[in-house]
Image (cartoon, rainbow, N blue to C red; front, side, top):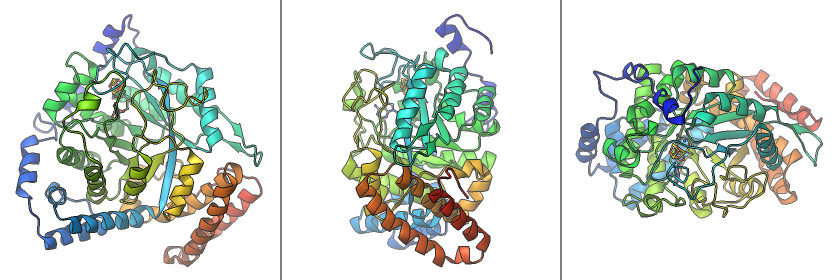
Length: 503
Ligand code: SAM
Ligand code: SF4
């Protein structure tokens, strides 16, 4: 890679215009604001029968059109919303069963050349203490995360010459190399999936991330509204280029990274518009690559140190609207995983998970280096924003079980080739959910043996029994006895101390 002497010089070489232009349609990007606004206007006051048909379409695991999404977003009756919420959960159960996958974010660096108005890491924020983790610190952080029982991390960095792709590849390799020996069982745990949330990159860099063995590549557009985007991302920064960001996932798919994750930072502009933007994003990825987003995230603006906008934005989304937008996303893109994070407060998170989320974080620390220092959520100086939910994994697992969900640490998909178009087909046919259930049972069994508190173990044993009985009676497995056989074999191997078995 070309060496640049200064950060400014480096920044000038990050964007490759050709790797934007090739995805445009007649020179335009896929976010046509007049079309979105027209659709939102034209689909006001949808009739109950219209809503019924839309919900049926989603239940049949078909993506909704922008017009159908707009109709749902325009529903005003509380009764209709209750129906939407219930259907959203039903769709989730059909595609992903009742599993909730856990992960932990690992903030590796808060160095950043950008100046996003909402973020504590922005370059103009002098209150932020800057640091990037050394290899030894990545080991300590990963070790502390493993100690909680996690198997999946998302590595997060700001955008900076020192933490670009070379650093990320090294950090990922280091995280995969760490081992933790359970005090309860003596069994060894490792991180099995490192996802990455980092700035948009060119195709050559993305190929290197693939070689480093990442799971999902995650970039949030923040806002799909062009004018708002310009307002909150200064033009003289890399992030100021809307289209470089908009086509980050296109480049990733072209580089062979099959699991890409989109998202919007809700609270910067009208939430209905952002949902439409996410839907158009999913449509364009499918149109150009036949692969939809692996997951969709909907972070909500949280107060950040030294950011006026993060406290005073006129577009803050209420809790009630937040629940609505998650349910509509669930219905509009039924195959996408939905991630709710510890930005949200415990009570709301509990409620919103039940409209179709598939993943959440736990034991979350967002300070750079704060897992191993055991800093609490109140230590501000190297954090990006303030957390809403600082509960640990064990506590959250108890809540999930009480809600009828099975906690999962499954990372089988990308290791068995169930990524990209392969997983996409299985999700659409509702086959993947069956594997989710088997792998949820296997990985939760591991958790119970290696990490669970006594009270979680009691609750956990009962849900495992219930799930095992359900598996025995599922028609899907009756026709596939070899799968059931492997499942039983793997389950018994866990008791014998074997780890990391999956189907
Ligand atoms: N620097 C990379 C980038 O901007 O793509 C990735 C890391 S950034 C730390 C991860 C995400 O945090 C951003 O994409 C944004 O959506 C979110 N974020 C930033 N400020 C936030 C705030 N005040 N509240 C909630 N989420 C925030
Ligand atoms: Fe930097 Fe990302 Fe924060 Fe923007 S959102 S200031 S790019 S870390």
